[in-house]
Image (tube, rainbow, N blue to C red; front, side, top):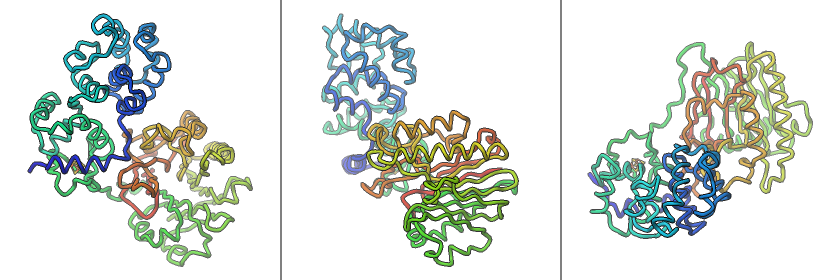
Length: 481
Ligand code: SF4
């Protein structure tokens, strides 16, 4: 079975409209400058787009032209472009580039694959990409995504990107040559991922032959592997009453968690039905906000804790019901709903004050026992924690101030449990309700389980349950011992 290529490209093109644009295309659109496209393409080899974008921006601040680039030494270039992959080699190529451009091409970027191949650091993929992106001339840039996906579709049956390029030159209609790379790179990064592609929500699911693919299995809700393990779940339900209409209780029971923490309950206990107020086998603790229909947290625990703390002891935060801490024999469990910094960062001061007060609180607790902190922290820490880092740099949840606080927490030794197991992009816990963002996986990872610096040995597993719907966030969990 092979795929209908026109149908496939047409569907994928529509699918990726709101995906992150590959960085080289972005630079081409923003600058319309073949030299910058060439430099960015050299930087981008074996490097994530986020790192390429930052390095390219830094480099273009120092050197926008071949003449300016020629003035930088190899060691200066190494510092500027770090940490792109193979930055030492790339610094040498970039250092040599202006002279070759000047001597062989009169200072201009050449326009054909064959001539581009004479430049330092330029291989076939780079040359094709520059021809297609910078000069809009027919060329097929076959990178790992194009090679992989064309084989998955059965459109080619090849072993190397070069073989794929040659096959595509013979059979792919020329109208697709220019765009195929940017379309399939975006698609390959966002949905048809190299490992465990998201076939279950792919537009091509019904007619893709999936050659050589092991589709992502929907995650099994975690089962404990030993009696010593505890299973903790955290979920921002975005209104518990709404979630109850979307199978909250069924999901809750399926998890069978030892502790289940919820944030943004947006309800007083007296507004809730008995089925969530009295759950057999659980002790339940509520900390609603004073303001109706706003914020609030709750915890369901199988084991009765030794003690319960509500809030941080500061009225301005505690009236919003943002914190509950349960004390057990050998750890504290803290459920938090961090404030949102709000558009134009209107509430950033309040949020940072809350962040500092919370950090002081957990530092105090962890002097006597381990600390498990979970909840909606309302911040994506690193660029790989959200789909569109570039366009959100100054936005709430990814502002430098919020990220700096998170840097500080992690630098102190606190453990971002999910990243202990998974360093891949594309793992998110919140998606806007707009723009079909969840289906397209244009999301943010803003819900966490953090552990205190001394408790790494207690962490068994961490997971994001992005197949669970019912809120604009999905649950996150850890196994703890
Ligand atoms: S995500 Fe799955 S169904 Fe979609 S193109 Fe990739 S392999 Fe095919």
